[in-house]
Picture 1 (tube, rainbow, N blue to C red):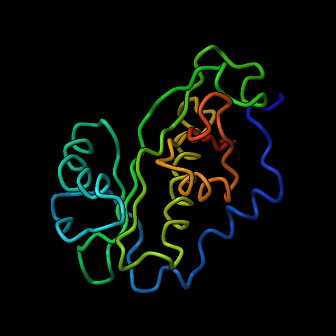
Picture 2: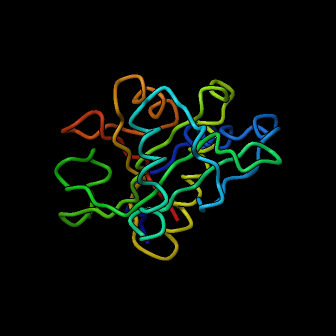
Length: 185
C-alpha cells in the first residue's frame, strides 16, 4: 500500500537524527509532562508571550486536555529551562503543499506544535533542536494510534520560521509562517 504522506528524504532524516546530541543533554533531565511541582516562575525566554503562557495557562491547558505540555528541567531541580506543547488540529487541503494533498480529505489531521521556548540562560546550546526532535517522535508515536499526516507549527516570525525550515518543515502555500513536517508510520 502506498504511503499517503510525503517521503522523508535521507537528508531530512539525517537532520532529525542529528537534532539530539548527547552533550546537549548534560546538566538537564529528559522531557517530561508538566505538573504543579515544576518551577515555572523563573522561566524567561526572549518572547514575553511565551513566558506568560507558560506561567498563566500551561498547567490549566495540560490538566484539561487542551494541550499536552512537556518540560525540560535543570538536572537535580524542578526549574523549567525549556518547554513545548502539542495539541490536535487540522489544516485545510487547499493550504498545504502538493504532496500533502495527494489522496487527502478536505480537512487533514495534524498535531500542532503550539509553543516551543528555551530559557535565555540555556539558549544557543541545542536544547530547542532537542525539544523539536522529542516533539517529532511523540507525534510519530501518536500517529500509530490515530490518523496524523503532519506536525504543524505556526511560527511567530521569519526568524522562528528559519529555525523550523532548517529541520525540514515546509511552508503552507497560503501562510508561509504555517509550516508542516510529514509524519510517517
